[in-house]
Image (cartoon, rainbow over all chains, first blue to last red; front, side, top):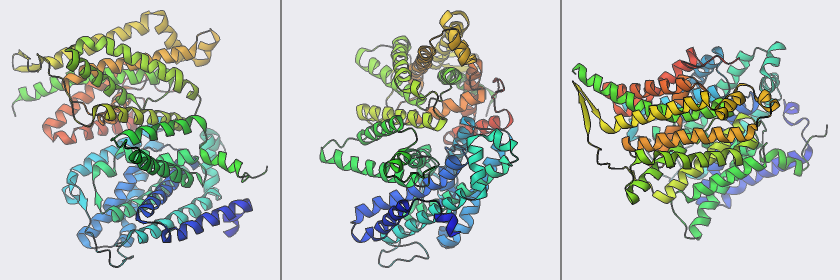
Length: 333
Length: 290
């Protein structure tokens, strides 16, 4: 397993990765509360980006409705905590299967009926929107008025119930991000991973080679949905409030896929890099506009949109493939 | 509830649905020819709606009359967008096109937010509260005008694509890209024209819709989604399908608002979309992709 994990990686790449991990491990001791929140946000988007990347980057299935899995995970765990006092770690055992089931249903319906490409993307949006409006009318979880988790004292960190200071959340999401990175690497170097790449590149050819494309696309959706639900549980306990309008909104789904697309679709490091670039850009813009006294609603998003446009036009494959060539990390063929 | 309530709501939904249909027609034309999914469609409509409001408030020009110049402005915008930004992206993968248009949409929504602020705006025409009575049926005059205008614009568009030389050339591009290149059509320019025409449709629809609903900048993304639902329900690339889908979704929303709760009305639209995608992925009037 170790060989599968680190085999055929340029040594320089491993060193850089180790250095980054070390920097992230010690970062909270040098960062103030604001920087820590930004780092949590970056890691959150790295994690969700990694999860989405399994579906789009590996298996080539464009999902624009991943907010659905975040929301289902968040609401399931929150409901268990609020109504039954069941902590988030046990809650995961329910939240992940719920999201996986939703992914399986969508995947089954879409892949069985031959819904693909743009149509598949819009089907995923439709399910997420359906859930958004549906949850608006579920009184059990607060409906459109929002669902609130009891906020604990910050006096001590309760890891078991995920109640505590931001620094605890930071290490939780860092651990999740590292785990997702390792899992994706293992998946990519496994039999399933190679099948996914074959499906992504040419589904017809993959089928002709005897790959059960339906089965492997289903596996991709289910794993991706389950991983995304874990982020949902984190979201619920970190923010302590859930509104269907926010959690399931299409804006959330888009936000979640920007990092891997900007970073580099189908690459392992793309989602992480993309999250750093986009969140950094967004926060930096807030500061800059504030400093310039140009703090009008909308101004930040306009610049954000322009930056996005520039990246998409200038770097078609994302930033990471370009950067890794620059850093000399490209494997020699 | 008496029967005429249902009838009234159904007719109201039908007329709103025609305007929805015109908006969706723009999306359908663009996708059918350029094969690019316009994720900034609703945002372009909000631009048209704000133009209509500005013209009405400053010069007291009626949105239904201003429909033509507004459609013209949107045509220019769409043409420029396709020629400048989207044409280089035609052979790029779907997700790249998607992000490009999401970025455009993000910029449009927030530029509108910068200029007009987050408050809802509307126009108050002199005929805003007029209505026609036909037996038990009482119909808003604005909705009748808007629905009729939508039919006129759609008919003009059908005629353009069937009868004019340029319309035929655009259909040729849609049917066979390589073939169109071989016979010497300037495909890129025709794509830009098509995007412009699609944008003009949505511009016309926006100037009608401003009579029916209030506009805020975040309305854009919602209408982008609605346009998708309509177009896929009717059949992506099918022009009559877009109108039919618009009417179907308009009436479904109106009925759901009456029978359940208005806030849940789009849920039924999405439910219809899911059913259509599963049982007839090419849409009600769409042709099966080869």
